[in-house]
Every structure is written in C-alpha cells, then in structure tokens.
Length: 55
Image (cartoon, rainbow, N blue to C red; front, top):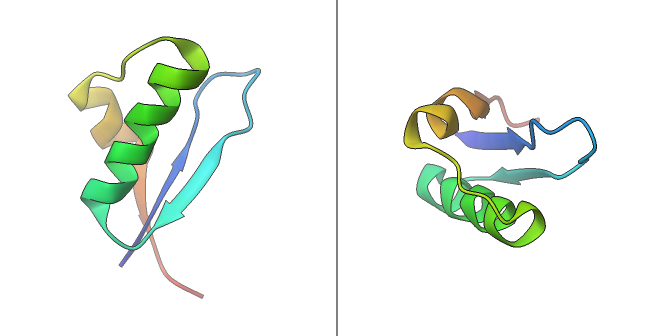
C-alpha cells in the first residue's frame, strides 16, 4: 500500500509518497517542523495521510 501526504498550507507545494505509513508520517512531521516551524497533531496527520493505489 502506498501512502501520500500533501502539505495543507496554501503557500506550500510539499508532497510525498511512501510505501510505509510510519515512514510517511515521520517525513510529514519533519517537513512541518523544518519548513513551517510547526507540529502536526496526530488527528490531523491521520486525516491528511492518504492511502492510495500504486500505479
């Protein structure tokens, strides 16, 4: 299963895809911390991390 995260901020185009959910979550949290000096709440991360079909 592939997981996708798109940064929800309007001015940010960060997007990632990863085969492992915990790795995708780790990279998404790192992006928020480094790029936006912010944190992602676990409930928000669950909502923003999507499972997608691999092409």
